[in-house]
Amino acid sequence: MKVLWLVVPLFLLIGCSSPDKLVGNWEGSPTIVGRKASQFVQLREDGKYESRLMIEGSQGALVATDKGTWKRLDAQTVKIQLTSVSWDLVGTDEATRKNVVGQYKSMESKMLEEANKFGVSKLTWKNNNEVTFETNGESVTFIRK
Image (cartoon, rainbow, N blue to C red):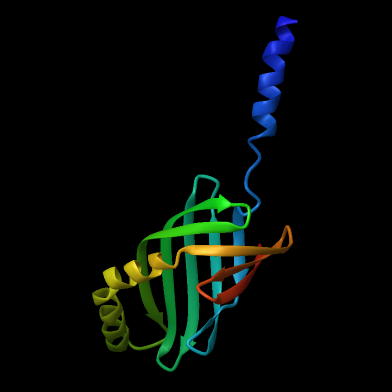
């Protein structure tokens, strides 16, 4: 009987510790200022978040990398809190790249503040490998990679 008292709590602990089905690598194609972008998102089991978004423009491709944390608020919502953002411009000359990156760098704290105002997303699952995030009226569907 004493063994049962040890086994049952251990079994319950193991059974309740399954990772959130959001954990993993995801890929989506949001529309940003009328242009299709490609976005790779990693949601780690330890609550870390990283996103890399690339959008083609007239002066090259803008690559935005966001880092932060994520957590479930309930079964249908998730909160993403950004702690850093960085931008780069690829496929252009160095002077244009430095100019554009410098402009973004000067707006970094304001952009972080604005992004974190809308960090709560509603989730709609199609299946375990496809989920739509709706944030501030905008929807992006992600496929597990």
